[in-house]
Amino acid sequence: MTHIKVNVDGTSYEDDVEPRLLLVHYLRDRLGLTGTPIGCDTSNCGACTVDLDGATVKSCSVLAVQADGSAVTTVQGLAKDGEWTGLQRAFHEQHGLQCGYCTPGMIMAARDLLRENPQPTAEEVRGALEGNLCRCTGYQNIVRAVLAAAGRQDGPADASRTAGAGGAQVTEEVGA
Image 1 (cartoon, rainbow, N blue to C red):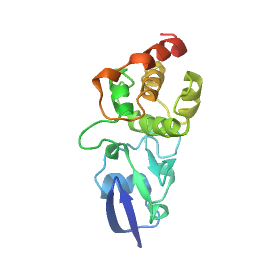
Image 2: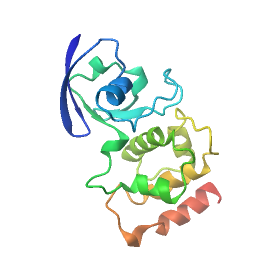
Image 3: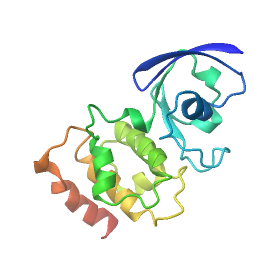
């Protein structure tokens, strides 16, 4: 067993873990954070994407011991005081999900994109989400959601900024 200290969604944890335990299993089985799904266990689908010290990673390809001393943010740690981020609201409003299984990974990958590129084009969104698979949608609404969120930048809910100019951008770039 190896002793680790990790901060997950703002809470510090200390645990003894087997060196071969994957981060996704640590999050789900040890911490009960089931918002990070196990999609493929081979890093192909991206459903288990989390933020590890500011870098987006597929948690099925990272050992829990590799997260020792790190900060991990899961999709469950994004909302503050029960308030969804602009990106989460955009996924809901733009119907950027169907079954929802891929949604946590899509949101985490899109969040990383928007940190690096606050005003991406539809093509840039598609490129950034390339490592995340969705078996239910045609990706159109997922792209729309990310473009709509680009106008919000994860700010608090604001009734005056639902789609606004971002909505026009979505229509132009996605062709809806």
